Length: 113
Image (spheres, one colour):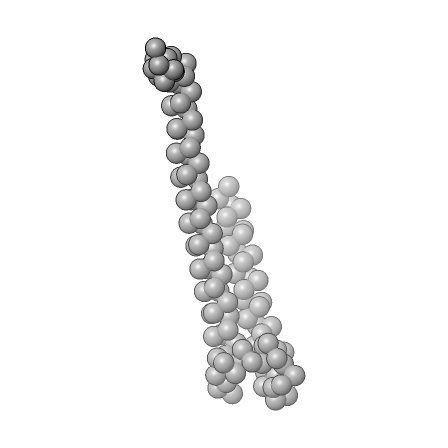
């Protein structure tokens, strides 16, 4: 008799093979779910940073988005007036809004548990 026929006809081996196949299919679905969640979180984080930059850029001085990004990443190269408006006024308000929104979302999630 062939060894493959003996293994295939053994009921215990059939059950073990079925369990392994079942576990592998669950692992593949789990990895797909984790990948999807990471993609969603990355997209939401990018959207948050973009809206934060747009909020900071929406100043009465009408600074462009690229100008705001320059002020944020190289504050020494910007004019003092724009640096004060962006860093001391707009950035604080925008970060406070993000902090309050995060706190409210965590409180809502905690209430659902």
